[in-house]
Length: 119
Length: 115
Image 1: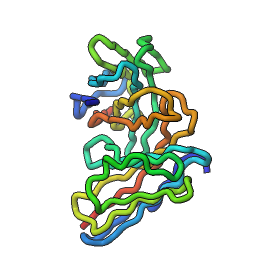
Image 2: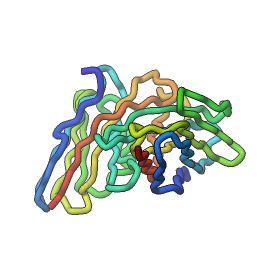
Image 3: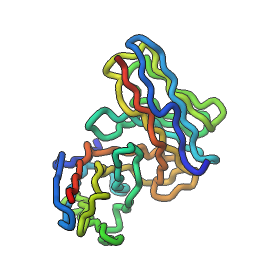
């Protein structure tokens, strides 16, 4: 069965601190996709990143970076020099990979980590 | 419109009432998903459409939940005889036919409160 675990329910940091959000996943699939979404208080899910299971390169996008380690089934997300605008709930998600002409690919979400960045 | 839209954004229903939640996907998107997000939880899959065909309804929590997409574009999620445990945000997502990486675009959601 597929499962995503985000063990950190809430994290509170002071502005400019670095913060890492943990994500551990379980799947029997050999190929799959991993995602991070941000959900601000307005409620809309904002896509941040996706990774293929066969691409373990870490990625950096401005203050955001992602560390994918297949050996530990983890896909952690780090925000460098956090800002108040980063305050939101962050979700890690997993889906099967494949040809979307035939595959379904519903997302399996973790329970989310609520990040509060205080000025 | 450019994105996925949902209406109403907020719905308050008395226990036992029927409700209908609407999703307008991105024009031309073949796949459409409904998810339910309870307070403090992550979204959970409800049902999946490919064009007008409902290919998976395994996530619907009871037979009071019904979804349709008759013309392969707009979808409606209907909940009959609402119960308090139905209170949640209902999210709709759409995906293009040849999407790589399973790129799903989410709407803003409908927050349902059952009193």
